[in-house]
Length: 526
Image 1 (tube, rainbow, N blue to C red):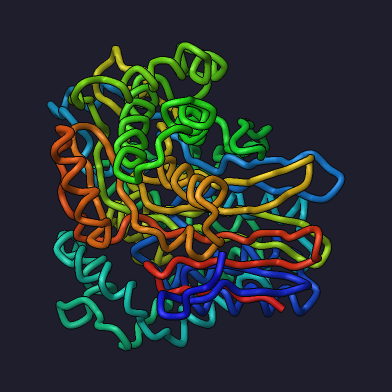
Image 2: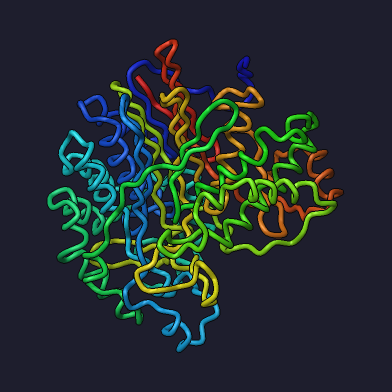
């Protein structure tokens, strides 16, 4: 597709290696690691650590991590680095407090952080450089300070009220009682020390010793059930990715407890379905896409959770029966209200890397909602996630709270393959939006013929529950059509998601990087 130089940015091109992230410091860190002889995993870990510093609303070492890794000549592998609920977390404990839902700042919302364990397992299996070298750039930034980027400042200000709920958190993240403005310098010296401890001791630097003690003491003081044994028991799993066909390509997604199967279901329902293929009007395609998304998410909410607790197999979730259910909903005379899982807020970072040897990784790290639980462990500087808010407190629900259980998880890396070769590691961060975002990106790229950057920048919409959110640049005729079709439409106050991707042009030996204009980052290659 011809490049319109009056719209947005160009994709990045390189012949050796490429990284796409949501922040310049992270992209530069990754490129420097690659130039020093590190591989894609080294670059991803170092860049993720940097993002935990410079995008504190979007991610942190107190959160979770998923990744898909593909090395030429080998079967792709995924890692599930999501945390479990504490062994002492239970419906009975929630009932004694008369809870009907878990609030984001409730210590019960804090599942055990899984990111650092996943980083260390990935590094042990694939890494080349020392872990200390990968942590040091982020530690330096946390200690010496970083300039707050525009989108980071926007997200910070949006959630200042939540940060103010906790005195420790407020002291660090609301200096002078106010969120930093764009261009202000912010420091996190305690986090710098923790990153260096991880660099020296690996996972033990986080899950055993002073950092673990600080996390447990912080949560215990708030009435949380977490203890040192919970942290010590945290372990990421290497798993086989799920796969589905779309537009002549194979899409790889992480299996449950992640929601990757939801993206596969949306695309399975639309891909070779005659009403979709015959729909040339963008307004009708928008309606069908939204309907497919709503129903696929509804089925997700009924079925996806910790794989040890699922009542249906993943094969059943992706069965012809499920595909028919999505298609039937698409053709319903009017949209029907469907139950949803809060929250709507978009958090998370994603990054994509390909190195000179063809090792490719799609990497996601998250606190769930901006600034997670807003519970900051003061001595270690660890902001803790609130993934436990995904748990249902109805004992009959598949995703109900239970001891040592992983909740249904929104963060999903993606990997596109063709003829057993990696074509594109990618991700679309953004909370609940991510599965819908995977589908929209691939529809634009593979069906509508957009180039990578244009597909990333295209206007977004998200149908979830009884609501459709649209970005402000969605054409007004599309919004009118959706409203007339019976959808409840509102304009999103914050952009939907943020994509990072690297396309591998095997024929020409070129890497093409795309980075979302909705964020502060960029793709860099050489």
